[in-house]
Length: 377
Image (cartoon, rainbow, N blue to C red; front, side, top):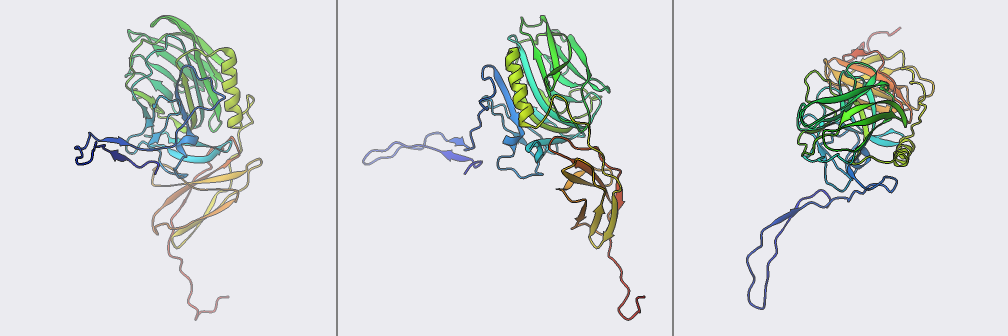
């Protein structure tokens, strides 16, 4: 049974004797993941595809282990309370991992040692709220220690890419506007190779179009022990809020033709375009009616949307997706009478999701009705 841990020992025997047990080995069978044929193979050191996280996992479940398909076994893991949520069919029909922008984040194992042959990274992501200084991918061993980072440029609309040399000096640059809330894109970094701590050129692109370039350091050759997805070492940085569908990392500089091929593959896979469609409109007129243990919601339709998502929270907590479908109404049942619930709704299509609507509050309660003995008119 895949996912079940089995323990094995072996003995030797002849006609009259059997030896003691050998030492035990543990093994857990699982689906063997392999990179798709469209990706160049040389130097591939990380391949996280949310579709792999969906193997054996339910939509809406927390993902504590995101399996690496590069062949290197560099699975991303999340500590208790930090796991993003699996959302299947959310981006061009493919799965994403949804980070809440508060405390979600994943850790990568020690490794990612040598980038003297260059570095090429691709991240397919859709920010739902653009958090100050949020990091998509951060490799290193702590602040100023062999870092490689791609994230938001402070509180601007551009990206920031930086590396550090062996002495902890930063080389960085910011891009033109590239991050748009609720809009998915393929973000890519291409960095030249060179001697460790030498200065080289790197470029950052969005959907295959270069949005910025600058001089950075070739990171020192070292085992990076604190590499992360979605969150940072720096306390002033916000956590990433939104969806991550795929992370691909090479420890070499891909050729221009290889970069174009990978970008084309990802654009096609996730139904994206180098010229993105305008944002979807926000559903208007969200209303709520209460009943015994339930809330009845309704909202206006949005042109171009294929469906709607309803998110619910209690108090000032995190929104949880409770409905996804084409209807412009939903009855939320199984609620606790006397508890106040907050609701927002979004519109979506194959590649986009709108911003949240205005929130409505509703408190389910027992519905009182007049007794049958009274005339009703």
